[in-house]
Length: 162
Image 1 (cartoon, rainbow, N blue to C red):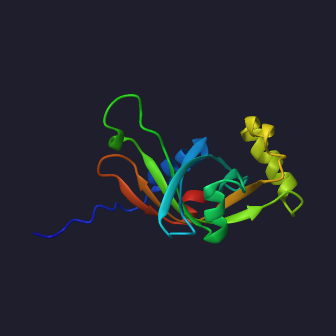
Image 2 (image 1 turned 30 degrees about the horizontal axis):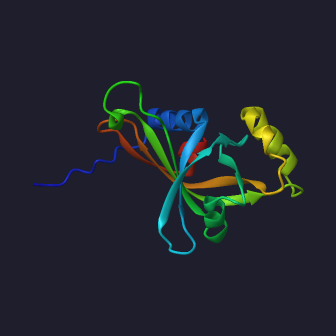
Image 3 (image 1 turned 60 degrees about the vertical axis):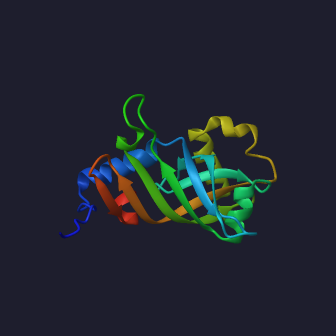
């Protein structure tokens, strides 16, 4: 018996679904590697996208995931939520493997990034100006789309960002 490769050929429908999942996401599961043990940790973060489509979040230096990203800037993001009915595993979701790039207040591009992020996530205005907060923009290295049953795709950054 031959093993069938479950990965489908990436097509425009898969690209559109991946882009939609990312652009519609208001939060994500963020996976990082903890600096003291190297073990993975997952947390939930607020999410938006930059003007060019990269995922971005605003996080505090005080958080464990910020410490982990600063020590090892590799991360994984999971977006896509199960629907109200049915098996959660039949609903589309997108996993991104990324590298974090940081932008702090006073650094080049911060003002524009903050204005854009806050236009999308206005509740973040409550803490965006705190000195311990900074932006983490995630540079996508690869993507894995599960579009539902028998709809698995490997994606490049170009597939996701356009």
